[in-house]
Amino acid sequence: MTSTMLDGAVTVVFVGYLLSKYAVSVLIRRLHDQHQTLWSDLGQPRVWQILVTTTGNWRLTWFIWSGDAANTGDREIIACVWAIRVLTVVVFTTTAVVLSTTLRTCAGVR
Image (tube, rainbow, N blue to C red; front, side):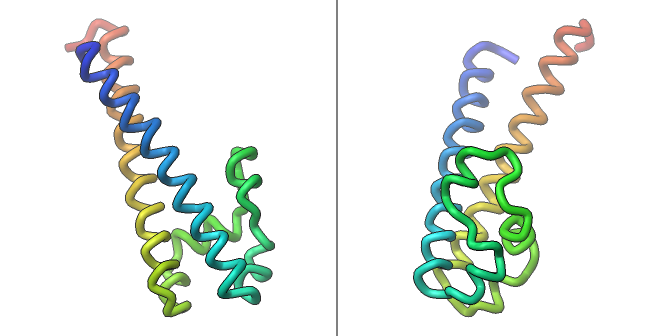
């Protein structure tokens, strides 16, 4: 992997990570403002939990990856959930490609 490709991949991971955190903050705000009961059921997630901790809130994570968002009927929540999912897959895939390429290069495998 060339230096330019590595720089691009790192940028994709960084920007994707930041965008996913922003989408989670919008989701949390929407849940808090428009869906108080669901927000409470999810453990009253806060933005700082998502930004500061590595695990965040497992109930919110389950909500994002299950089909429960569609049950709200709230298009903004559904859009946030899909944005988070897509960004997570892009960041994970890019990271995996960079790591595998780097490890193969270090091992001398072409």
